[in-house]
Figure 1: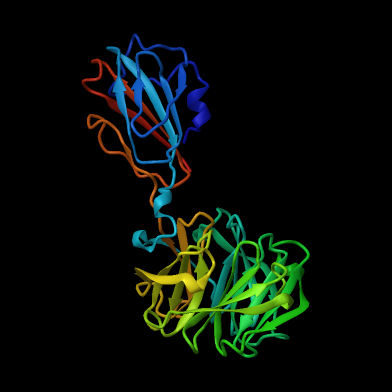
Figure 2: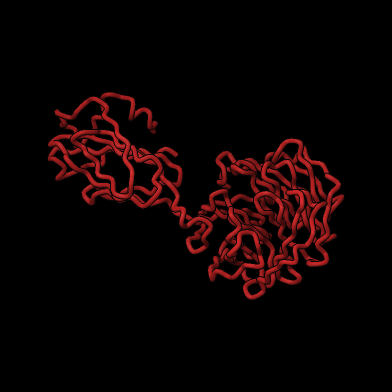
Length: 388
């Protein structure tokens, strides 16, 4: 496949075979221009390369001032429909998965590093945190075992959840054998082979004797635990961010029992205004709205849910990519991480005379080459170049 640079730096455009092959008066010099907005009009009489940049909204393109014979290109990067991020209403299975059964046959937790190139699981069969490498960030179909793991059995023999601080230098484990959150130090961020117990822990037994999920706010000054015994999310305050030895119960909680009586996993969106619970009584992810970010006392059910039953009947944990366009579930029926799409790419509409286009993935660079020999009465899409 040709690269984008192959197309834009040459002074002689492609001479397509078939439709448009007889062009004789096509302007040779490269005449680029940036375009923007939801309805860009491409002046083909003046320019022959139009760069939209990232498609930040649904966009409809039109062509104007088309010479009798012309060849031109339109290029863009498929952008996310940000209004759909972290919204279960738009969820669908992405047909991507990765088995962790070679390391853990009873996975209970799931986490990623910031750019999604590292993934972590923990389970009750091995009491170890396992690390995986993703050659494409947040794409589990590209995952492989990194041959790195860390045993936490000296602190917790029934781990149910894990989390990291922002730079991956601190890791947190919670489990049901001691009902405590344990803290670990990683000398290299997000590298569990460098982990050691930090000799810091905090008991959540006064609120939950079956903690199954853990999450933090962005700066680590609030911690959240979901428990299967009371079907509620409990909130804690950390006077020093991401230091569980400074934790105390914030006297704030929220029951999810009306939706899920066996909650196993917990996650938030970036600003804490949305909270997500997954459990094994309904095999469903539920979404909640918090009127004050990361304050569970302001939570309410958003009347949005998504069943993962077709992939996993005992879901244990969930995670999201950074921008909320992908969701991940791990469970104990298949010992597999499943990937879901939450937000589609913004749509591009070209004049109907062009015909049907392929659907690119978010982040793909797309370049179309068009030709005409009749002033645009007929426009041929001669090249569709998608660079992943």
